Length: 386
Image 1 (cartoon, rainbow, N blue to C red):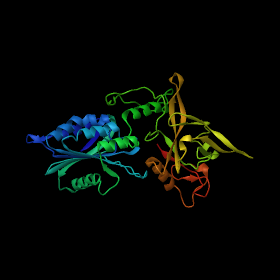
Image 2: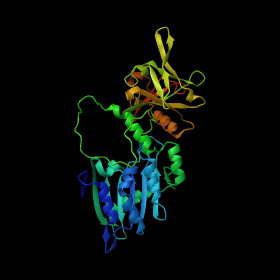
Image 3: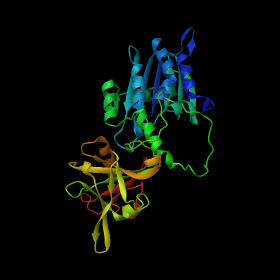
């Protein structure tokens, strides 16, 4: 069966399966789910049905990915609520290698004899189960069918924390750690970022595309206010970002940037940058006989970092009279001490070719360009998707 959303709401189909009966009892004994993202509105859509399913003695196994900052703290918190006195477990999956993303969307309902498999594009988010244009295929068969067995093996592997270090069983303690270390964001942080990014889509010109009449699911307390400042760039999904391995100058407090990088289309000759906590840093220049040699700005937060890397991204910041201004925001990490910094350094390192590319005018997502041939002394640059 082919399922197309929003003609058929995927959340409704999941709830129907969870409540499906056969001979006056629940048809399915087990529900196994693996999705790339989950948030509060998506879990709220199926929460009551999941709770009912568990209250009848059935079991639920869930695996959720953490890539791109799309899975929220509250969504995972909602899953933990379901584990109280029930046969349910939740695992989270994250690969520190930025080249690998956990991206499946698999739903398997089964009993001792038969199973129903759903595989498609739907995540466990409000949009994914209700309003997005999505597609899925469903397959029903005997539990010994090779398709069902293959799905069951994959789902089990994505929960096997003993064999795969990319997987961890979700606990309240781990959830707090994920939030504090920015593997997941709160719903409020995501709403704030989206509000700050609104201006990227042209608001004054006529739109290029049509608009559906579908109303998005709202996860309880919401806000449509624009952000008063800028937040972390993690998982922003806003255009491109520039990744950089920094070679600090001036007692480790100064970021220096090649003039070719500054004047290229990404930075576009900007004369100031904004830190993640909202501090504006003026860009100055080191001079040589032929003119400007290197651009630079002070970054006191870099003090003491042994191997700093930086992420630059254009964002929209609210100024006086609530007018949006597009600013270049930067964030610096110590790749020796911070997981996110380590991932940025790995992304940069993976793009260095042999011999390395030193033409700074060829900035791209495909490869890393370096400022000089000596990798240790060089600054590394690479574009990436946000």
